[in-house]
Image (cartoon, rainbow, N blue to C red):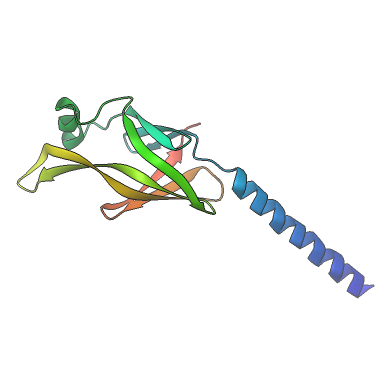
Length: 136
């Protein structure tokens, strides 16, 4: 009887793991996300600006037409693994002597790693790491 119970338990645990894998496959980035004052809406392989931060550098970039509400924030997002996506995102450049004066915006590689609960993700690039929270 003990052996039978052990086999049933192992079978049940294996089933649970398969269900977790199926749930991971269903997780998407689609939705509205925020990180501090940054707000972005993601759908499919693209994310767009919903709210720009009030930070001087980002506001200067907007004033110069480098970025604006509705413009892409992410592009070419592609799922590359369990809860991992890769794509490009904007980097606003400035001179060290003038940290609030935008000189240009370039597209740089970003990696997004989502928590299993689907409520937060970590965005990382060679320029840093930020945490984003799902708004909806």
